[in-house]
Image (cartoon, rainbow, N blue to C red; front, side, top):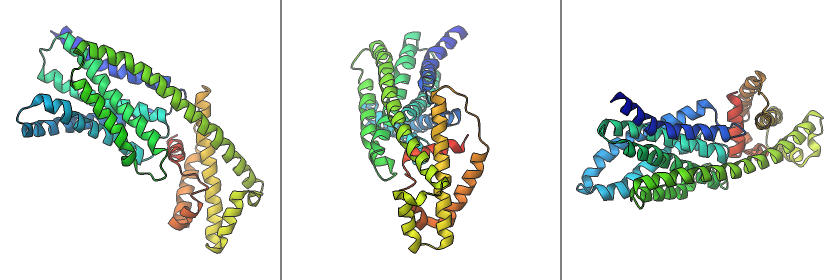
Length: 339
């Protein structure tokens, strides 16, 4: 008996976790650290617990029509809750690139599937090995895959927006995740065949996601790193005013006091140093070089926070075009702050 239960746990829980580890290993930039991965898994697990409560309460409104509920209502509830976990990561600038969006999305889906399968293990303890193979290789992978697709598409669309409001960009990804989930629950294919298709398709999708994501990351690094280094060099050489950006900053002196202008210059310099540091860490990771923690970064972050408060919202708005406050740059600074 215990051997059978152990085999069910092995089949039902480990494939999705092994696939998640494979995704982390494939990432040459090592964008996702364990302290981000674990909250994503925990968030997915919490979403699963909440969905079990909601589903048990909502199904009563459908007069016991389990087929309709499982095909249309449950997928919407579950995909929305998983999506909310990723939206939190987007809102807090913890996702910088397509690759880490996909990894964190799959992690949230994995956490969801683990709790769901734990519930299934308790409710259907007599289910045979074939059922558990379908649960572990089909349903669990589906949960991870749909959330990864949602995160990837939402990230791609939100990068094109100027405002940091992920929900409008999340609608297409949520619709696609719901469609895939609903189709899976329609049992258009026999359960074993559906699980086999899921296992065949997911690796192909993952490879293409990583190719597109790493191409995007490399482009951002090449352009952003050179620009930041050039501008910081001008500042250190005392020739900042010869650049277009320098002339723009000097044009602000009629709007701000001398003390605020001095803080703005310091703010720009420190922001550039931190941005270059973040990009440098990614380049070192791609090259397989060890990353040595720089204790000076934490001091620079404390100084940056002080200067941001000193110049105030108006000053930050004035220099925001210079600091290229894109989600990728915000993520880079967030990542560097955790080194």
